[in-house]
Image (tube, rainbow, N blue to C red; front, side):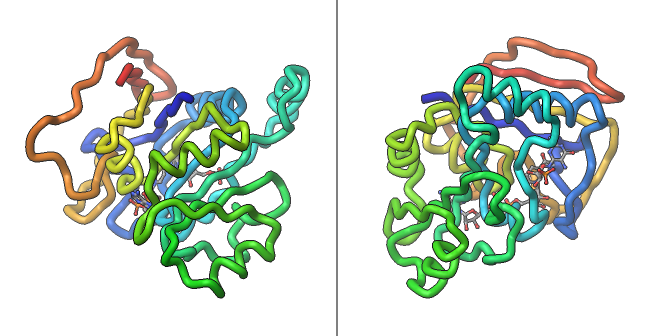
Length: 219
Ligand SMILES: NC(=O)C1=CN([C@@H]2O[C@H](COP(=O)(O)OP(=O)(O)OC[C@H]3O[C@@H](n4cnc5c(N)ncnc54)[C@H](O)[C@@H]3O)[C@@H](O)[C@H]2O)C=CC1
Ligand SMILES: Nc1nc(O)c(N)c(N[C@@H]2O[C@H](COP(=O)(O)O)[C@@H](O)[C@H]2O)n1
């Protein structure tokens, strides 16, 4: 199994503004690269905070990328995966439409009626963990469904948890040439934060794209 985290930050490390609204940090060339990374993976994952803030579709729009997947025998779209301990994904969220399959990861304590509302959209609900999604267990569950190469797009809470659990294989960060600021604005890794044993990464490539820089790390 491989887990590739990809996100875009401002120079000051923010994923979005303090309003937590979606912010286009990437330019056209970087968004095209993000689509290629999506196409190369079995699944594209976000936390429910990102679903609630951005209502993303997480699909491929470029028919050539869809065709490339089909040529190698993969489904036309990667499966969308949402980490959603309490089943808060709204049934009318774009990730639950019929444009691609979706797996929603919940905790055992998620309210039954919200789980049922998600299942009624046709999505698969997988329980892993008691109060919060247990990520290693959840990845075992999705690997058993053939989803072994996973791209994670965010947000900061989920990315922190993945580093905390030692699950990240590759990190790509596009740093756009802007300052966002705001002490409550989401950053690349939020959560509780590390106070010792900080993860150290291997910088393997630096590339200029649009008016920013793509940093590539082995983790
Ligand atoms: N610039 C970029 O590349 C991206 C920006 N964003 C931004 O990030 C913000 C959303 O980020 P966050 O609020 O941090 O939410 P998030 O997307 O990281 O979701 C966090 C939620 O995921 C659920 N979750 C389930 N299991 C979990 C676990 N084991 N660890 C952590 N979370 C778990 C919890 O309900 C938690 O509240 C939005 O403002 C969005 O616009 C999101 C993705 C990419
Ligand atoms: N790579 C990247 N660059 C940015 O500037 C961004 N704002 C994001 N956001 C992520 O992309 C998702 C949108 O997906 P759809 O276009 O709706 O499929 C958004 O939810 C974030 O995950 N990413």
